[in-house]
Image: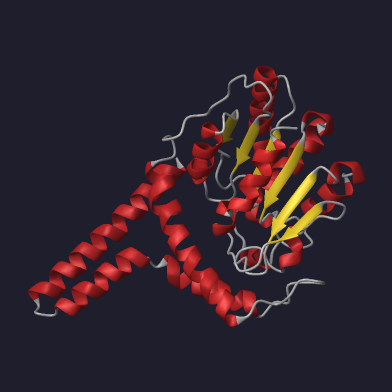
Length: 298
């Protein structure tokens, strides 16, 4: 469903740019045509991202986390513009099924479950899936639906995927989750008391303590990502130190969606700061994938 919606959005942008460019050329203003093509390439997404980064800069990242300098924010913004186009205008709308799951018995390797975040689908993970396949690592990437539903609705989907990887590999998997996906994993662990069924959990830009961006949230799942909301507090209260030690949390002070940056960390977890990388772009930070590949051998 999400892929279909995003395909429509891309089609609207392309149609608008084509009409505007044609009109500009016929009016004897070819420079307007060039501008329309630039709008098509950069997308209105770039403007929205700019506003997010301006807001991010007004919020202190938290104890022990350095505030990003303006050049770092600009670099992160541009990286997010390019990555956003790849993800939201190509991989997710048109390539969400391009990489099939690779759940197979692979002696000596542990399986990996990939879980996306808000308004995403499994197409987000295409670069990961290609590298995991080349490494001979069993993997699955799931879609969290309903897109705007409560996070607890995703628990059963995760349960089915974990059970399938367990059955095929006979080993507890590694779970890698981006953004809201990390909260869905924590909800699954709570619902199934599943600590022993997972080797480790790697979260990337997950709003473990919520985010300022959710202040104006409208959907059920985004309201659950508001700072200090009851759902997040109850989730944290249900967790033991042993469970939190399963987590490795990658976060960054240039994350334009999850800020303050410290909100993407968990007490007792291994928390790693990645400077100069924005929210979606962080999911493709190669050292994170290298870390996960190393874990599959243990």
